[in-house]
Image 1 (cartoon, helix red, strand yellow):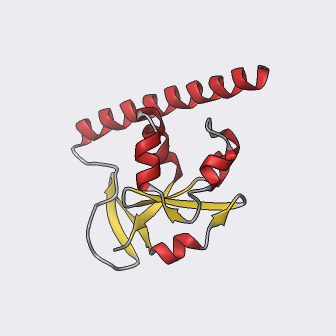
Image 2 (cartoon, rainbow, N blue to C red):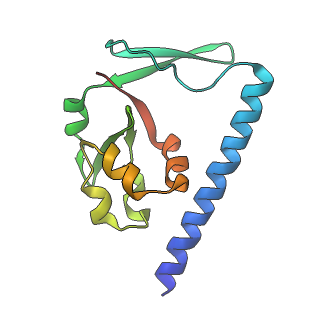
Length: 135
């Protein structure tokens, strides 16, 4: 019972933290007139760029075969909605259990993720973002 309370508490904590970061991000974006999000270009090069403040930031693009190489509990990447996430550090905190999240490691898990998760889970994703899925 105590483990459940701790898991729920951690989930609530991370949800609130992500919400507060998102609110701050939106506030910054409106004030500066620039988005902090990487550009959504359709190119197939290995990197794309975005502008953060006055700094250009490179965002790596990964193929599905690159994602597939990260398919276990110690190295778990997922493609969700055209973006790639390294969720290795989240496996032990997944409210649905480790087995549920491990089934998506190394794969395009968009359909599974979309069908099973609430907005709170979508809000957690940006902290694990590592790049875009190349087409």
